[in-house]
Length: 98
Image (tube, rainbow, N blue to C red; front, side):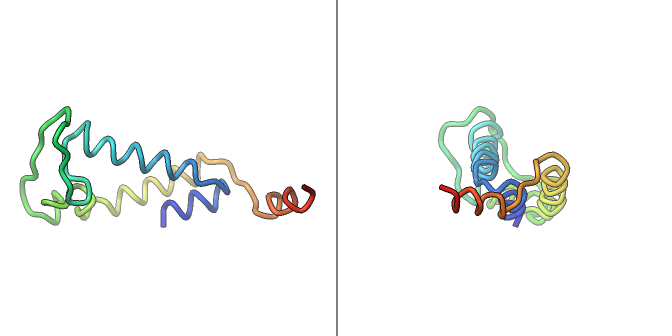
């Protein structure tokens, strides 16, 4: 839904693609945590989950944690406050003129 919000706000998939790529890279390589339950072999830091899986994400990684709801809300707020607003009507008119 966050990526749908970015698509609605910018009329482009590039922000969503870039954010998702950087999110996966940070989890897999930089922090060395599981990304949707998959661990990569070569990573910069070595971490392991501690505590209850609902708080740490367990074997799923941070995406399985309850804290992801707050992170997604923060990302949604960043999208609404920083990304430029575009309208589909302008894009549709550009295609009609071409």
